[in-house]
Length: 214
Image (cartoon, rainbow, N blue to C red; front, side):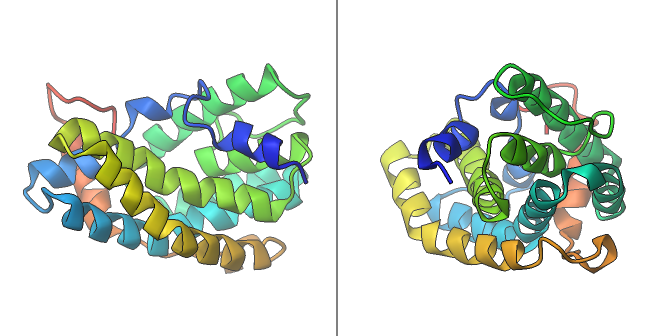
């Protein structure tokens, strides 16, 4: 395992379109459900425990068995009830594969796979293992929304990164749990839902003016 390669894959500057998405944060801010660093912390912890675990598990599984990317993509699609979130995830997966093809030879994948599946395929192609794929997925789940919070709420970026540092052990725990399940059948992988984010995503998709795509 190469730590430098993991950093490349998890780098927020990777041209994979992640900067255009808030991970559902924009809709929750508009609804008045959070507005400060404490609220952001609760939001990120909730995402890690639910959709973060799901994303990390599917990234780990796709890394362990990239030849099953199609069934894994179908399984993740079934766990994403919001059409708006499916669209956002597939857009990010498509952009991630485009970036990945510039760096490593990639195996065939499902067309426009969900972002966690694309991430796992890239991790495998780069020589990383399921544990590293899961870490990258969990890390991206927090950092993407945290970066959006700085823009949406005008939060102190130093305070936001201090929060991310405090969340690092939780990211590690979620990633370790996900990696342990990398070889589970698709139907047995985590399926934790986030109904409020699903509803928010559908409302957000109807806005004429918004800062983020999701």
